[in-house]
Image (cartoon, rainbow, N blue to C red; front, side, top):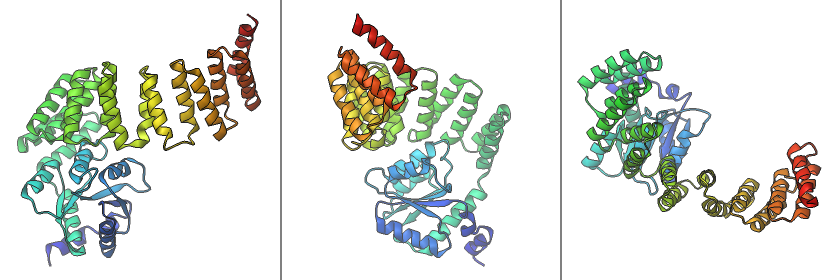
Length: 399
């Protein structure tokens, strides 16, 4: 009996993926279809797909009917190559343990070494057949069920840390360190120090992990997160920029960099970071605009809101927020024009009439302001804020 046949008796792939799915990531639709057909040949039908690396990350982070239990990932993809996806997965607290098989058409020793260093679970060279794919998946899952001793120590230490037994967890992690003094083990040790509130020790260990393996994204992310947590923006920025140089495809990191630059008054650098973010994730443009509003930059927020409306012209909320950004700059007439556009989309939106009334008040057009406050009350007769504004407005009109 062959090894694979023995493995098959231990792990049934249809059973294993009964309550979870495999994510197939490739920019070629025909390749995704081929891999899905191969998976069906050995009984795995619960398969989801992504056409590029950034879509893969979004799919993994967004809720799904079933959890992802395995990733089949193409190396060469245009917007976010597989190696960047791997770095992001391994750096993520929730996704970091996912098994990944990297698929490539090239046999490159350096590539294979790089993938192994990043924690890729297996490697598959194109072209391949269903039998080879099945064996690779089985081998990866079997290895995970029978990991090296230092990995068992890490798993046991993680369980202890979750229970709050930090000293016992550190003992196991240090034992693992004696067996495999790698950056991954060091990050586990840093995590425990952070949980214990020993931030200086944690940063020290995370920094050493980053020095031990400069391409280990998770170490740099940990350094950045803890520096942000303790208010050291300068050190956080350095770590974030290092992380972005390793994997430049994380919208959240570009947002964090933009916020730090904004706080420091470096508007040009902040704009650069936010533009990069919006190129990666256009759906986050509104988040950028709101951050700019919160930071007292309504003129920058205006530009982002207008850009967002180019692709989402029916979004009443964005029109409303654009109006507020304009009013904060004293552009009350322009704000009114935006509110009018929004009212055409949603003619019974009390917030739009209310904010239009406020804009008219700012322009000292009290009669038009009164008309719009009355429209608010026709939509919502119980809105006390509108009633209060009408009282104040009458005082101004009679002054």
